[in-house]
Length: 247
Ligand code: ARG
Image: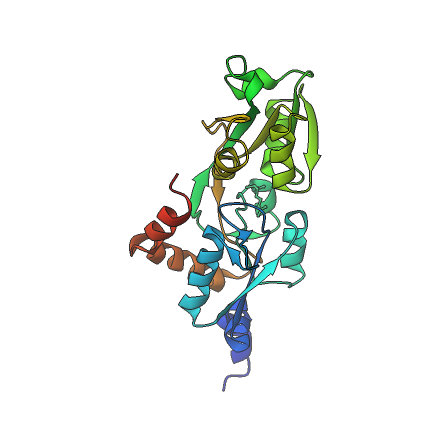
C-alpha cells in the first residue's frame, strides 16, 4: 500500500461514503411549502421535493430520512452536518452559492403575486404595487422577500415566518399582496384564496431550484447531477411533475 494512498483517495472524503456507511440519506427541507413539501393528514411528509429525495436515496440504495428544518436556518444546518442535502425549493442564488454547492437546476420558476380580489382591474402587474399604500407580504429569508425589496421598494413590506401566514394575510384582507414562488401561489390561490384573491402568474424573476450540498465535494456533486439527468430522461421526472405540479 503506497504511504499516501489514503490522501489521494478523494472518494473516501466524499459525504457519499458517509451516506453509504450510514445506510441513510438525510434530506433537509421545510414543510409548509406546497406542492413541494408539506405534511399530510397522517403526518407524513409529501410533495415533489420529498419524492425527489426518495428517488435520490433509492439511487444510492439507502434509506430516505426526512429532516424538517426551518428554511431560515437551512444553510447553517447543512454546514453543521444536520443533514446531507438540501431539497427545499431552494433557489440557486449567487449569494447562497458562495456558501454551498448546488446541483444542476431541477426546476425553474419565478416570483408571482397573489393579490386581494378587491384590486382586480387596478393592480394588473407587480409594478402597480410599488406604493406605500400597499401592504406586501412574503416569507422571511426567501427570494420572495428579496424580490419585494428590490422591485417594490416603495411598498409597505411585512415579513412572516410561514408561507401559509402570508397567504392568509391576503385572504383575510390584512395585506394587499403576497410575492412568492409560482407553484406555491397557485396552490394557495386554488385552495384558500378562491374568491378572495387572484394571481398575477407571469413570473418576474428567474429562479432555478437546485439540490444544495457542502462545498468541496466534487464526487457527490457528480453523483447528484448524473442522477438528475437520469431522472429527467427516463420518465420518472415527468411522472413526478404531473403528480405535483400540473395545474
Ligand atoms: N424559493 C424560495 C427561496 O429559495 C423559497 C423557498 C422556501 N422553501 C421552503 N421549503 N419553505 O428562497
